[in-house]
Image 1 (cartoon, each protein chain N blue to C red):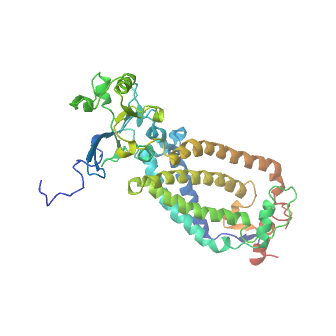
Image 2: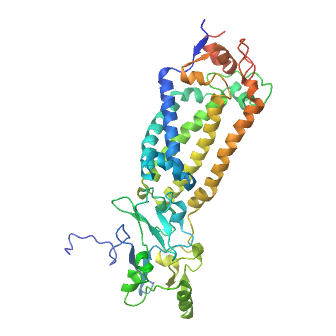
Image 3: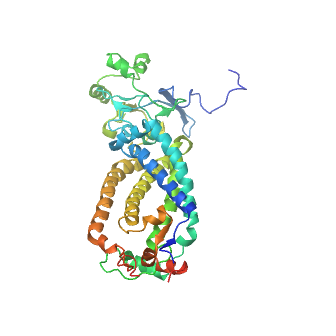
Length: 231
Length: 203
């Protein structure tokens, strides 16, 4: 590559973000302590298939984001209506939209998994840093090896559990991942209150009409009876 | 002296029905986005993609026409006098069997409050609507709050619209004529808006 034509981004990592074509990447983080010792951290950035998935909670199109029987959260471009609510509801900022304006994210190679094979990432990883299998068995194995786990219980249990070697924040992960507060208020508070508010308003005007309504008619003889004024 | 007195001129009526038609379009196209309970409403627009497209066009028409309506009446809406304070104290007489005489002008205090809410809500719904439309151009926290605010304002809007439709039809017979034909009966004007009725030449 011609050095004059490329851009220096302060990191060797490439590519630097997920895209609509890149579902899964290794995030590379370099830091130095006060003595100048350099430390490298690596993290697999991808959809973690939350047990309580914000994207599925907000998606207005049934089936566009759904869960397979294996627990994988997958997308269906045919059903996606391009509202982009999932982008805002994801606790990990994972979904991306491409030129076709449809959602994409890691689907854990659900087609391969459904056929009894490993997802491509676990299949390709030469060091078994990425492992795929029964969740309980993998967690037990990691705990036996003394690993500190991230995501075991968060959001009803993440489908992708990390063995981190530093604080979650050092990896750019939220310490305590949850559905964003505004999204929770919108979907779990305002939405049910809305149903109540609608029928409450309808009931209020019906009750008003049958109790006070008759009082507000205008008499044809030219004398208004009720309302704002007694004319 | 004729039986009727002019209340809304043609331009005002056309503008009002632009606002109303775009509101109904926004309501029908937005219901499916509000909750999966209302997913069936997408079918009116040939699916979710069509509903979102209709929501954007209707939103632009609503934003412009509703703000025009607001600014047309801004002067009347922002002038509250002692009679308006009395309207608020007695809730317009709506909860009394024998309502007191309230000397309202062209718009009573409740209508003024409704108009001011409409103006502010239209502005905020427009701004949050654009943010929700192109979320990648704004920080995630802003978009998340914007989605919430759009939902809250929508809810307030629908509740007020139920009350608005009731009060202008069966709740106060004779009111709708003003928005359909432009003129209202003199007895209606003298009953509901005596101060305005005097201004426009009633006895």
